[in-house]
Amino acid sequence: MAKETQNTKTYSSRGLELSERIVSINRVSKVVKGGKRFRFSVLVVVGDGVSQVGLGMGKAKEISVAMKKGIEHAKKNMIDLKKTGHTLPHPIIGKFGAAKVLMRPAAPGTGVLAGSSVRPIMELGGIKDVIAKVTGRTSNPINIAYATMDAVKRLRTPEEIYRLRGKERKEA
Image (cartoon, rainbow, N blue to C red):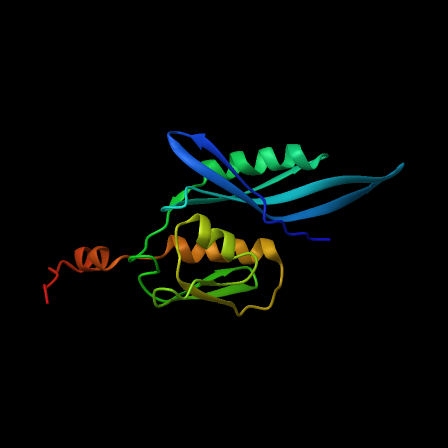
């Protein structure tokens, strides 16, 4: 029952112009004595299109309320997406549950070659050139999105790696 939309809305928060995109909408039910209780869970990506991106999940009886909850959750969990130019600094594999996402840097002009759950995270995070492939044992969009965020959190720029190793970068 997962659905995807390409709706993007822009609003301002903490001085940032943030855009949000819905990754999936899922109707979940709970069986009770009188029948079934339906609720909606919404997975939302929020980003500024430059370097900040966040992922949030909201659940409520109505889709609009679930979206608001997801947006608030995503704004609280925003992280800085490290990049080199318009692509990733190095290849990386993100894992969450049974989901694995392989992301590799791409040449300028390649675009975002990624699946439905990875694409909004990359686009709203400001990545313009990347190749991504879901290699895990799941097609669950929620786990794929969280695996992507795991990979994004573990990215390191060359300057960070030199600093961690205590070396200086040589100019070529």
